[in-house]
Image (cartoon, rainbow, N blue to C red; front, top):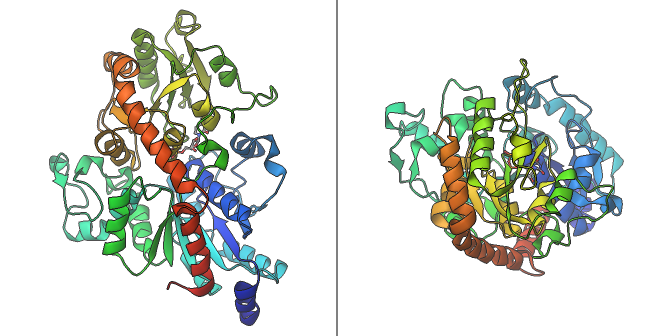
Length: 475
Ligand code: UDP
């Protein structure tokens, strides 16, 4: 089998097995990555672990024609613990026990594709155990890092932070700045990623273990582009020169790099209610408000947001993930929807974000600064209002506001309850004054992204370097 594998890799098609962490913010960029390799002629198997990306998700990302050139998508044949959010301990623990199932899947893939046996695994930054699977089959493993290069630099430095006694964080020093992380600008301890804020937190050890496992990989493919984070990428390459760091982002379907809104479907079958509402609004007038696929705000905070948006006088599209609400407390203030009718729209659940950000009526994005949302907003040229909630979002927000100045700060990650007064004032300032500088800067980044993904430019070159490395090893 080993000989067949070597022959298959040298002569035949590369076969890359893409394994995402089963959460939207991780699976979506890995899906885009898989599709991109597939379009380059690489044979790809995308593992939709728990079938957690539904047909609707595929469709809202790729449109109705997504089946024209199908890529191999397989489930692992397991189901997640019932009713558990994907950051809960039972869910994380369950994902960590999937080594045997993944080995069975790999054995099946080797048997089924003798002409193109799996040549490498590309897995998520939080699936450190896939190294064991790759070692078993004697193929390299790469990490697809779904956060920015600065987040990667941070994760690679955590064991040093533990040695220096900066982790676990001493709460009395949380305003202190840490200066000496290669590739990371001075960062407040309170802005460090949320899993390591509290050693009692379920994810503390999980996060640290995954940080260590990153350097076991043959290389790290980062969902960023060189021109967005040049100093961070150079610092990484200098500090850890044994493995490759290849920026391959922004990972989005090609159509989203063109600065027009033609990508929004006109087909009424798949036209979402919020898109129909956006059709009724003037150009660049609406603030899109969404906190991603994980964060769940309290009812009290949702009420403050609604009142803040109402008092701001601005147009808005508010997307909400409802919190657990056994007493059925109304999510929105009484009469809110009547009072804001015509200039506000509330959508509960999922919104087709890429289409929303591409709609001509959207002029700003109040975001939790998840890295996918940030890149999507940059690629669609939409300036941001930053409200970080968890994960590495506080660091992303600082980058957006202080470094590239493509956004304005609404609050800090440590703010417990953001009041309606603060929301109303900042939204009003942002949509009337702050937006123009942020828009100018975000459009510059949008152009750089377009250049990075152009034919023959840095992203294509890095993807080609990756395929060459898989075939012949790091040169
Ligand atoms: N997303 C979406 N509709 C929603 C919420 C999220 O399409 O209603 C997508 C969004 O476009 C992005 C991903 O889900 O691709 C969220 O990833 P991000 O890194 O921004 O945040 P996370 O959800 O991981 O906190």
